[in-house]
Image (cartoon, rainbow, N blue to C red):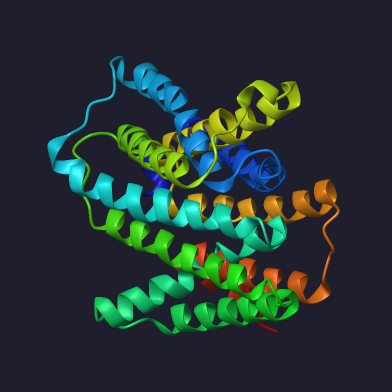
Length: 308
């Protein structure tokens, strides 16, 4: 979508909404790390989605003036995204987060360009451009630096688990990219949360002890409220709502702030060790994401400015 077809007021509103979403989702990384001290992983994921459902329902009612509707032609992709992105990927992220720093996890989950390249070239037989190959290589080097710096004994499996979670997330992204929605995207997210929340609740009841909610204090509930309704419900809701108001390249660039917020907030709030090699790897990965999100015209202008 070209920015010429979007009013300046709409773009300004979209940027503000997306920035709030980025802050919500970025600060959620240290919040989840702390939350795992009071609730087990499967319960954490189930509560995260179940507590967010009313927020998504409110988004739909405010924008559509009606209750959420499940469109028949959207059911398959809704189920796929719920399974790969919210059940498998989010479940794996939360399990692995018990054993690795939140800041490191927030960066590794953004290895999606590598998995997207593999999916497109190996599965869809697409030929990648030189720009895409170079940027993916840079991102991969950054990822390898983070893994090397963080690969203490006992942490290697969770680190690899984060990469698998990123790959599962990428499968969902690619599936959505081929789908033409018949209902609204915010309604699709609502039903994905319903499916994921119900599924993870069943897993939590089956495999983990029931939480003693009566023993939770006000700070515990405040933390769960942030992780669920605020970070997940409001964060995803605003990100979806901002989509039609902004050009895709702007969405990509602003969204790149999420791992930066996640990493910096984890270091500041949780006193996580700031490893130089991890920082260098993160810079490479985020730089690759930023350049990849820039329009070709912008890159050509920058190249001309840097010429002697």
